[in-house]
Length: 258
Image 1 (cartoon, helix red, strand yellow):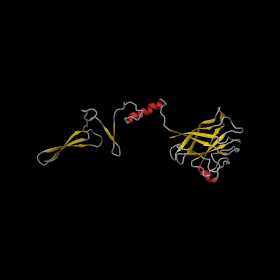
Image 2 (cartoon, helix red, strand yellow; image 1 turned 180 degrees about the horizontal axis):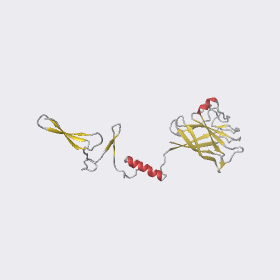
Image 3 (cartoon, helix red, strand yellow; image 1 turned 30 degrees about the vertical axis):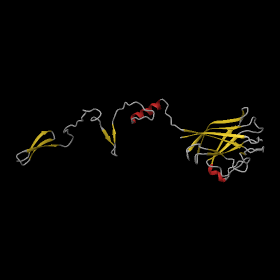
Image 4 (cartoon, rainbow, N blue to C red; image 1 turned 90 degrees about the horizontal axis):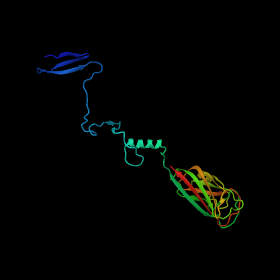
């Protein structure tokens, strides 16, 4: 028995194929172009389970398409990506979105030598003449990272401003200065110190507050890169004056780091 060809629609023909057993199988041949051959439905009998759709990424992982009405999350509480994004936008609009930074502070006291030897301008102030007068400010930031020095203060434990005393500078280093300058030595940056030198901070001129001299400098915002976690410095006088024997000097630094 031969095949039977029937015209069923424009550009579509139905063929009844001879199955060689006195029966025919229905075969539809589509013409060139688009044609609808049926439809596909999604079972939605179980909301939240069988009616969900998953979009696969190139790596094979799925991304579920879910609700977009979740409450904003602005803490470290559990939440969806949508809730976290909503929380970020909420804080941004309210101008409350800030990046946290870590604050650090260190104070170093030195008792100068037990003499009244004259300090010339640009002399180093230290605890001994035969060893380094460098100060060590421990734990000023993360190891080998950049920090910002925000403020500095100098306290001198004497009751009156010595004649000739003016301002002070704090010269900074990322390691103990190899020069090892002692008390009353003229400040210098020899070739061996250049690699570790970080510049200086103007501390200002101390004022008489009764039993104590004090000066502070805020808003410094000086950026330096640490070698470890400590910062090192020489305290240097800008004026010529005669100090008191064993006067105590205290230097305090504050910094922040990302």
